[in-house]
Image 1 (tube, rainbow, N blue to C red):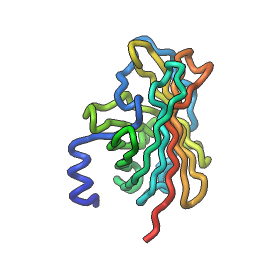
Image 2: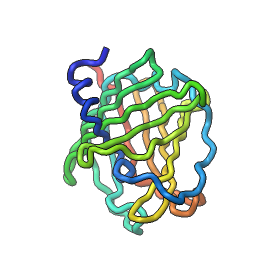
Image 3: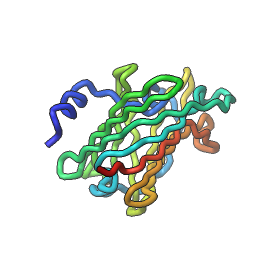
Image 4: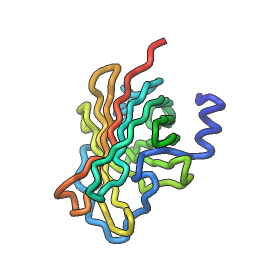
Length: 193
């Protein structure tokens, strides 16, 4: 059962996933790339409390290579016997603070996960990302969104490096998935008590 803090946080539904979290669904985006099938236990490795180091490109798809660095925590709460989880992100750095929430749901009929992001700054949900791990330690997730008035594809990679470390990478494509620009890289290390 989630804590009172988790329920209160979930009620406000906020997540940070960089610029993707504030993007709207694209009106005329290219089709999503194929993704591996999902399994209900895909995210079991991530349940718990993590120390997060994050790098975020400040101006995606602008030609800029200026990055900001943040540190903080990520808490991952399993729900519905592992077929859902709630991720709370709270990081800070010279560019400010990012607070967010992600609700991940396993779609039994389609055998895939949906990742639903929101952030504290906007309080709105981004277009859901879909995908899975296909039985491997690397998950691929995609969405079609509108970024600064143009349709883009968003790719999110989640990788379990070992039992105590995982990596997240977000990239945008403005050319239908031919090329990708990484704009968000986070590495989580399990916190021990």
